[in-house]
Image (cartoon, rainbow, N blue to C red; front, side, top):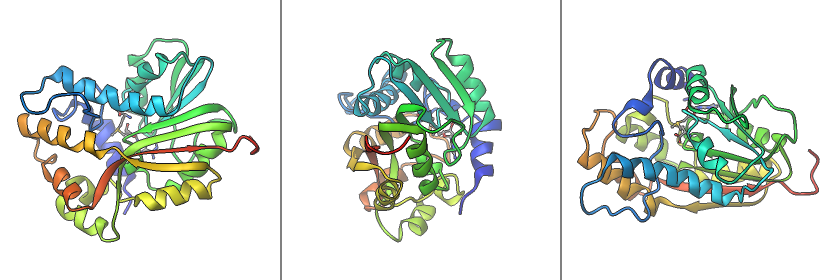
Length: 264
Ligand SMILES: C[S@@+](CC[C@H](N)C(=O)[O-])C[C@H]1O[C@@H](n2cnc3c(N)ncnc32)[C@H](O)[C@@H]1O
């Protein structure tokens, strides 16, 4: 059951980024390849893991000079700095929560970057406005994934690239079982979107070359090690790794392309 009120509470009046499970203003589980997990972990390494998740997505989009780039679910807006390293002409961030838009604006002073309030299934841009669209650990909150796919296809120009990283589910019984394991699923903050359905929705919206690649091997062990070592708020627990081990969910990089011959 969707609960936008919960998203607004957690990211608006609350600030999830302030929890010790995250660091540096990012709000994602991180991509820990190359970070040793057998000793202690520093806050700098936790921040580096979250930057590396952005870098993975940005690399998948082959962003280059002159590109117009949109991020959906931009949070504190720190991903824009990773995108800027590729020399785009324009970077826009959309977030449902006005407080996040304000935080992102404060964190960025590059004239190429701006943030607006908007929803994944109602993007406030004309058709064909962007060459690349990314979203990092936000799609698990989206109630309307077909709407997100449709809007992404609309705002991308022909030939535009799409890349999303987050956790999606793998089994029909995942919704009930995850609600029993993880409070973010029980509360309605996170939705159990089956990865096969996400792929189907993207194809249904007209995307080509849709792929969903598991990157969980570089996400879950690092996250769990960080949770094991750190002060642990009661609503973030070690059950993420258990859910993965039970085959209920995984972390994915989903990529797609808007066909070059399609209308803007
Ligand atoms: C887990 S945070 C990730 C933030 C950022 N991408 C990062 O990695 O640090 C998810 C973000 O998605 C936003 N969000 C949730 N539902 C949304 C929706 N339907 N449309 C747009 N943004 C949404 C939230 O407000 C929040 O800022």
